[in-house]
Image (cartoon, rainbow, N blue to C red; front, side):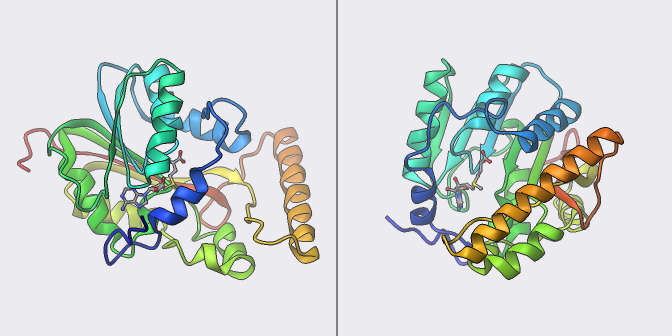
Length: 263
Ligand SMILES: C[S@@+](CC[C@H](N)C(=O)[O-])C[C@H]1O[C@@H](n2cnc3c(N)ncnc32)[C@H](O)[C@@H]1O
């Protein structure tokens, strides 16, 4: 089934079913996923506290974050995704690690999830797939308990990787709203969150999807790999992190629902 996911959605279930079919499992954040995922794992450790908490991941396939939160933070985890293949892969990924989790197969925008339920609502690479992304954030806030934390991570398509994609892979670029840390922070505050923080991390790490096997695309891929290697060597040897609104691979925002706030 190809669900458009509502008027503001920039992707479809058919697109994501294709992305998630044939994925090798287990798929772990701290497994074979490379430097980018290592920096995300470090960021999570620095910005979320372990404990007896219930977390919802929105746009959860293939469950690598759910798995990570269950194993490293001790959280109970729920997930929601509208891709049937994505949900099936998520369940298998979690079962293979012995994690008991609830996975809702539903469109987040119309799903009937109980409000004021979660200690943490988390999403990675999700909110920028909607023209009405501020409404998505407001809906996430409704699901938080008073005192709960919202965490949003995105590829920084307002920086150099967005520019590269716009020129070299315009079709995939159009599936995203290129959000800045400032825009996320404003939406978090407007949704009623407090202690809001936002920023950039993940270092300069170029990424362009290969959309064809053309000579130009292969040359671009090689140039991207070589640049990333050079940046890693230089920043590693000088102990520098190369981060900022135009450079960083990732953008984040986090905020807390005030204690005692009514839904
Ligand atoms: C970039 S992927 C998520 C990546 C993932 N969380 C990770 O491990 O990095 C975005 C996910 O959101 C899901 N999605 C997109 N629109 C949705 C919607 N309206 N409701 C629920 N899930 C949706 C897609 O099926 C896809 O699995």
